[in-house]
Structures are given as C-alpha cells and as structure tokens.
Amino acid sequence: MEVVCDSHALLWYLSKNKKLSVKAKEALDEASKIIIVTIILLELLYILQKFGQERKFKGLLDSLVSGKYLIYPVDLALVKECASFSKTLEMHDRLIVATAKIFDAPLVTKDRTIAKFYKAVIW
Image (cartoon, rainbow, N blue to C red; front, side, top):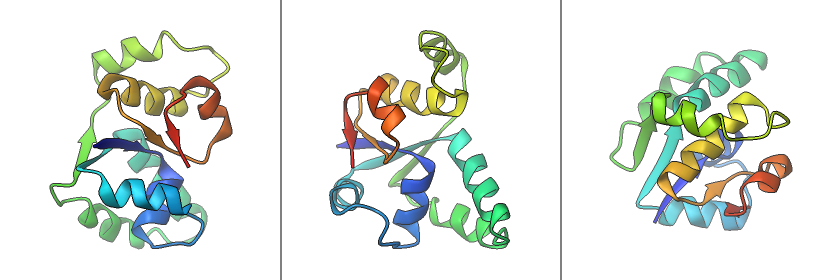
C-alpha cells in the first residue's frame, strides 16, 4: 500500500518519536511507498530551524534516499487539484491532500483540519 505522509508524522517516524501514533507507525512501516510532496521537505527544514536543529536536515534528506520514499514535485496536476479545495484549507495542507487524492492513497496525519477535507486519514 502507498501512503502520503505529512511533515510532523514524517519527522516523528524518521526520529522514532513516541508522538507518532501506533496506527500511523504501522501504516508507515508496512507501506510499499511513502509519498512526500516537496512542500513537506520545506516544512521539515522550517521546523528544524525553528528549534535550532537545522544541521539535522541533511541527515533527514539522506534517509529519504531509499526506494521506499517517493518525493513528489509540485507540478501542474497538483496545482490544478489544489484549486478545487476550499479556501479555508491552508495552502501547504492543500498540496498534501491533493497529493493523496492524486495517488488515491491514505494520508498519515494528526491534523484534524486535514481530516475534515480528506476522509482516508490514518492516525
């Protein structure tokens, strides 16, 4: 099964943080592909910089090299899909949900706002 992953879930998964739910961890462990839209990488950089841990960013990127991860670009199909969402959903969340829709994949996220717009959420 392929899954799309949001920024906090990915960070917690890669760092083996207990904040990641058991169900989310199992879904990521069992996934044949973990799909990550490029905005997630920028969000991870922001989070790490915010906490003075930007030196960890290169290592995080290096851990995504395995064949299990697919980095999905912001392309025209994704932009078109984003245009169909309510303005109340933040732009980076639109990109994440649009990616899940394009791949028809469940989305691993703790974000309750996202869950209102996309029903196939795993947490």
